Every structure is written in C-alpha cells, then in structure tokens.
Length: 298
Image (cartoon, rainbow, N blue to C red):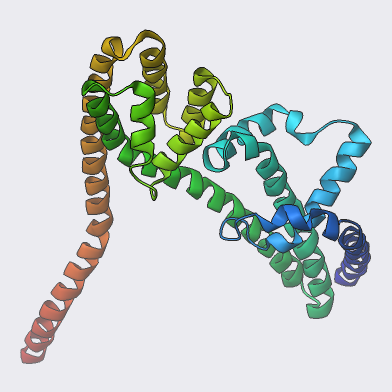
C-alpha cells in the first residue's frame, strides 16, 4: 500500500514540479516589478508569488472574467482597503490569493517527494503542514495589520477631533484646519490618511468621495460619523457643525477611557495564571520541606 502511494506521489510531484518550472520561466520577469513593492514582513516568501499570479492569469483567460468579481473577493478587498488603500485593494487581493497558490505549489511537491525519501506518511504530512503554516502566517499577518491599524487610529482619534474642533472654534476655515491638523504629525497613521485625503481633494476628487475613502481606509465606525459631520461643516458652515464635533470629541475621549480600562482588565486576567503558578511554586518550596521534616520525625 505504501509503495503504491509512493509511486502516485512521485508522479504527482513530477507533474507539479513541471508546472512550477513552466510558471517560473513564463511569469517570473513579467511580475517581478509588481512584487518589489510588496511588504515582506506581511507577505512571507513574496519572491515566489509570481507562480500564483501566473496561475490566476491563466485561469482568468480561460474563464473570461476576473477573480475579483465574486462576492467573497469584494468582502476581502474591503478589509485590504483598510491597510493598503482603496486603490490598492484589488492588487493586494491578487497578491494574497497568489501567495496561497504559490505556497501550495512549492511545499506540497516537497511533501510528495519526502514521502518517497523517508518511505513514511510523515513526509507528506510535513509538506502539507509547511504549506498550511505559511498560508496561515500570511493571512494572520494581514489580519494583524488590519487590527493594529484600527487600534492605532482609534487611540489617536480623540486627539485629532479635539485639535480640529479647537481650530474651527477659533475661527479657522474648516478646510484649512484639516490641513493644519494633518501636518501636525508625520509619524502617526491617522494623520497620514488625512494627508492622503487632502491630496485626493487637490487632485479633483469631491469632498464627499474623499471623506468616504478616508473613512473606508481608517476602518472604524466612528470615522464614518465624523466624516459625515466634516462634510456637513464644509457644505453648511462650521457654525452649525462645531457643536456636533465637540460632542463627538467628548464621546471619543470617553470611549478611549473605556478601551484603556478593558485593556487593563485583559492584562490583569493574563497575569492571573502566571501569578497562580508562582504562588503554587512558593507554597511548594515552603510546604514540602515542612512535610518532609514532619514525616522524618514520625
């Protein structure tokens, strides 16, 4: 049974290696430039993603439609837009899909060959686990990047709204106040998104569309409400919206306090188990010698 499986695996590995070699020759150069700009911290082994991009190109030509047309793809691109921007969401959907395909094409044949070399099912299992671990790592990195960006923006959001409200309340034009706040910090993600929005407006995008893109990239529900208030301030005048901005700033600060308390509680819960282990260790150090000496006396 094992030898039959070894021959089947050898044939499959040969076919997959031939496919790997074909994709390498045909698609390495065309997609090299696209992959140069991909963050290697998020996308592990990005150097081989041209394999997946080649497979996608062949699939789309055969089907006559793009893989981004599905409902699932649209949903995933919404999440990718929060990290990489709306304009790059489609590109990074292709890259993330290509990552899965490329890692499967690379590690599964290795597993198929290892079952022959080791003459054990462990080889195949190792290849499958390696491919799964790599794919899981890429998806986890993307999800972590989305989560970290949201938390980062949410933590700075109250300060940004307060700054903007203060400037508008002092009589500065709403549009100028936005640029002043955006240029007040060149390190934080939120202000970078604000500068991107300013650039979109200067390039001819409407205020409504630019702020909608801003809210989408930030990915937090509070930003949609804020964007609506800001557009209202632009269209109707700051006097009608400044009170709403003050209320939102107060709500944002209160929410930040609640999040800080929740994080403190979570941290305390995480420390509970180590503290119990330490307590048990101390008790063991104290009690065991006492019990030993008592037993010796008896």
